[in-house]
Image (cartoon, rainbow, N blue to C red; front, top):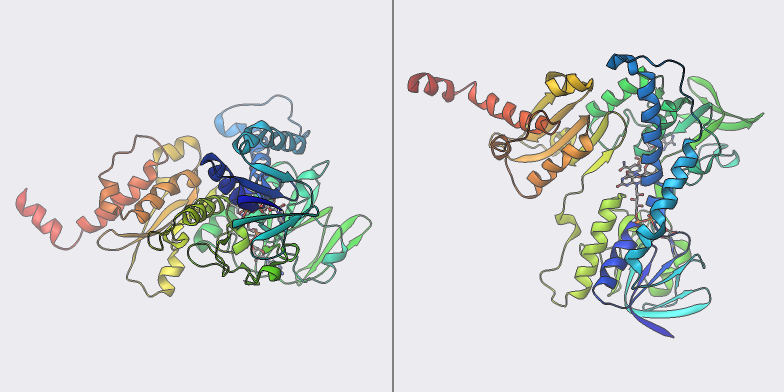
Length: 467
Ligand SMILES: Cc1cc2nc3c(=O)[nH]c(=O)nc-3n(C[C@H](O)[C@H](O)[C@H](O)COP(=O)(O)OP(=O)(O)OC[C@H]3O[C@@H](n4cnc5c(N)ncnc54)[C@H](O)[C@@H]3O)c2cc1C
Ligand SMILES: NC(=O)c1ccc[n+]([C@@H]2O[C@H](COP(=O)([O-])OP(=O)(O)OC[C@H]3O[C@@H](n4cnc5c(N)ncnc54)[C@H](O)[C@@H]3O)[C@@H](O)[C@H]2O)c1
């Protein structure tokens, strides 16, 4: 039986991080991928969705050139954005990605790996062993038990980017990250989109006010948003999808299901190794190790974060834990903040806790909020929707930040840094930001916090005396 220093199962962001780092350190790594290197993120997730959003944005800008004082003579036509998306995936998955794994042994597209016992894996009829095994097998779309849904030809993120054409109309079940991004991408490319969801605002894992700003924008753009709605059944008739809800029947060419994820565990035969798992994924401790010593579960398969950057970060931490023989100084995944961003226009981004969570925890907190509409650069750019909202306290300690607006996904990292490294509102206020960047919105919030302090209590009285 072939023996390696470590075996990695699954080559999405989590498995790629472990493989690239371990091989770079000179370890003998075997990486097994049942399908395509790059996993969900590169092939069916983050990258194609952002590429399609970009095509949509380009089309949307041409439709609104008047806003910039420009007239377009003639008209633009949506030709082949999905082909462009696929070409971009091809470009990334070629040499650009593969060169990181030159020093590892890869087994790709030869079937799913399965556990024979705690240290032995089988793939394509051959057995391999290692003392350290990293499971990084991700998730797949969860299809809810809506009557008829399993019987209609439906889209998920796995086949939506493989379509030939942009559909004329699209029903989307789910208003989370996938549902919202895909709704706007297709709508900007000319599709009539309706979103149906059981939650009461878009991107329900985040701040309600931010979700409502996005909903308002979606409605202006002609996207139907139906919150708190129960879908009674879905049928396919004459090549159309009929979605029956309490508000009536909605007809569309296609239906996209984006209602969350479930871990892909069965093919791994985890019971052969005695590895514990539950409905949300493989069970881990805070060092990302399963109940079996030397076997780690990283990325979406453990159900902790479902985000690419978190998957890569977990891969890195688990590898560092695996090569560190001392029980102290281990890295704990939950010591690190996990920000997230949804790449609609306006974008939504979150770091730390939301206002709702602060309320539920009974914390003593203050909300400081600055609107994009009050900032000259946002007006100059015509990007006035949204706000930066910070959950802080009288001392300026920062607990969380929600941003909805232009470049929210970039602005959020200053708040991640602040929260993780205990940088205060005062520190941010005292940090110069170049004008007129959108990042200056962050400083403006910190300034507002300071202004709130200095316009009441003893400070105005003292200032009057000292002047
Ligand atoms: C449409 C969409 C958009 C997204 N956009 C973003 C975004 O903008 N930002 C973000 O942070 N996240 C985004 N995500 C989430 C992101 O894709 C995932 O969090 C990330 O891919 C998880 O990485 P992973 O390595 O854990 O798993 P995956 O990427 O799912 O990779 C797991 C790999 O394991 C392989 N595998 C499974 N079982 C076996 C087996 N038994 N043997 C061998 N191989 C196996 C699979 O084939 C797969 O390649 C998006 C997801 C979707 C669906
Ligand atoms: N930009 C990003 O970071 C990004 C983008 C896409 C996906 N992702 C990741 O992918 C994961 C999955 O995304 P997602 O959008 O599928 O899930 P989600 O958990 O974000 O949202 C699920 C949505 O489905 C709806 N829903 C669930 N059951 C329903 C039912 N029976 N009828 C109607 N609506 C129903 C919910 O109301 C909600 O709107 C996310 O957790 C996210 O971490 C991230």
